[in-house]
Length: 263
Image (cartoon, rainbow, N blue to C red; front, side, top):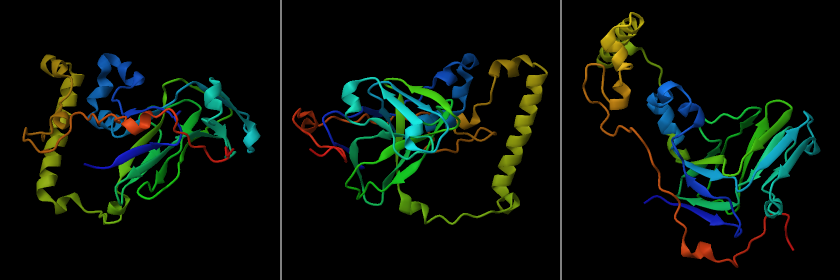
């Protein structure tokens, strides 16, 4: 079993849940057709979401100083925890994750915004944290894309955490090659291209059987265009485990101060 442990720095911390596949904008597409894009749906669930415990409103006037970004937090108890603040300037809104995280050796966390969940006027910044050794917390940051006001709602995910074996990436040696150098792959691609073009042409001509089929579903089924099954470990959905709350996390007396809050 892989290690992903969230150690609370205080009794009052944001909730963490497994990534959910649904998106409001995907639900709003005709017949929810956006979910037909399996890579999109799978990406939605490849990590854990950190949820806002209360509403946060931020307004940036376009200036570069920290005071040029105003932050309002709905609940008093979360203001004391510095849930959100202007820390870096340049229109950057900083959220406290409030956990010390531990992962297995040579595994860290990709810290980013929730995939495929755009927010008007502000964009998530990404970071990679070496949580296999780090003994302190980290933050999640968002940068305004223009002066204005944005609101984050209670229970809205503001951070998305995905474990990543960073050292494995250094072992890759990317290559750019001619498709003709892989004859079987070239043939499979040619067949797919021909079949897809023919299918789209039949759609334009409103062929009844093709219209009823609507889309070809090859990738969804893990098959090539000639019907052969290719993906032995093909994913059609992902549901990660929800964090288990251990007995030692329930102690109401546990208390640890955030940096700058020493008594």
